[in-house]
Length: 267
Image (tube, rainbow, N blue to C red; front, top):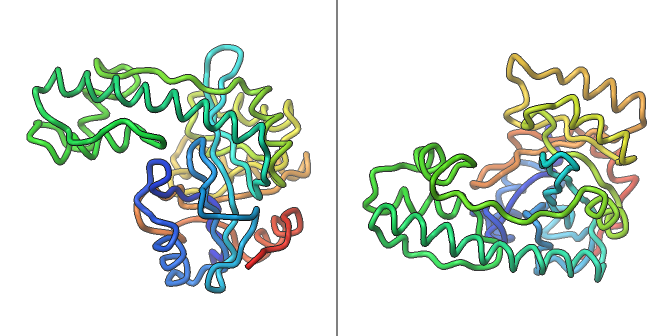
């Protein structure tokens, strides 16, 4: 039984949850805890690394994309984010890049399709926002088609964004967070190399439980073996961008192991 969903996004990045609706949804799902892990942002309405909201433990987290030496990119999850000036400064730098990138993508899409998407570049803007706007416009593309034909990594309207080098990212998260882990290892084109990063960079955790982790090419057993061998916490969550929680996450025993590494919740 899932009691803790440790991967969720809000309107602060590319999710549709507000903090209030996330808390309400988590409580309705019977969860004890949820983590807010917005992309490259620390949620401004959470005033401590761990807080109690209406009986729900809410972990202040972050999902930080980092770049490897060869150019590949992976996502790191930080849990129990403290008030750290260096990480906040990096988030501000990344958000400035997101604003510029978002403006350029919107301009390319509108010029190519001859439509007004009705959105503006802002902090937290991601391609899902643009895809939703394309879907809602008069263009002949739905959300999936927008990624497949326009704004995906090989699409004509794609614009790359600046991300943090992995050594810098790990240092920043380690200085600010109680727990640092690798997100969704089977999302990457080389899962084995991604998993090796847990050892190479002495991470605390690896995400084991998430909704899209059980394809025929995935090997969750490898994640569990790696965690056992190197004393890594197993984490997990829905990776919610919509308004559903508890699809994946931690049972009571695994959540208790994470709690041991986190600061006490503040009201």
